[in-house]
Length: 268
Image (cartoon, rainbow, N blue to C red; front, side, top):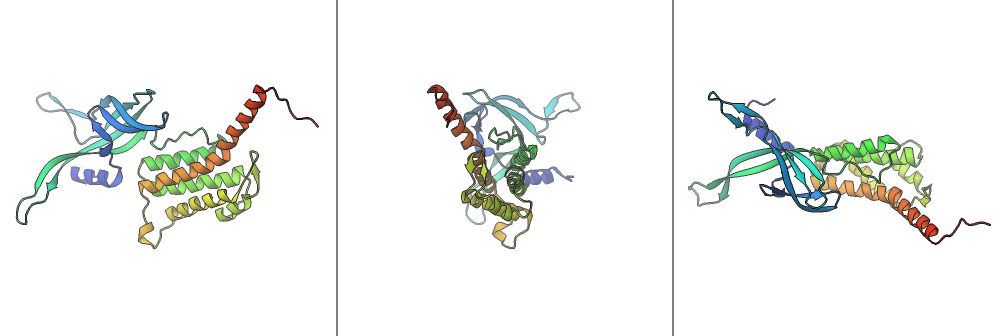
């Protein structure tokens, strides 16, 4: 609960990621298109300015303290997304002056993203198997945590997703994640032998997840930044790609070649 609007503004600044740098102008924002896999200027196609209220004269005005939403559209593929934002204006120092003089200030508008639909981390990935459902659930929650600026929670969920892979997909004996990562080395999944690379990459996710779950005495490791969470997502997707996506692509290429060249099954 807030006592004043300043309390609300301070909470927004501390809780949500600032996205001011993404704004190009009133009609365009620089955003990532997951379909085109490219960052480009998205068009603002609709804007909802939040609450309206009426004064005693019957005139409606926009409540500038309320959140508002913007619908963006990719100019190439026409895909669209929605952001819910807060816009905060404040007087900020723009130029330092001599001691004793009043610093020069100007009104600066900053934007903070509360959430996005779909999540900016792209929560739906075709490469991730549908079974067991708990794997996609863990991954989606990791992405939603990233979107909410809860990067410590994201680290914990990526670790959870990894352990679902070791136990429910690679059939490791339930135990510590370290033991499970060691056990699966040498096993075969989808025609591919699990190597030490899988265990080494998994170790990074395990340790990062442990840092997220348990407070560390090292002050440098108490927080997770947005970059940390994004890097963890890339590391997790490296495992997913090597385990699920690459073998399927290779299998499809082999089957397409056999069909195209009319080569039948090998007989002995």
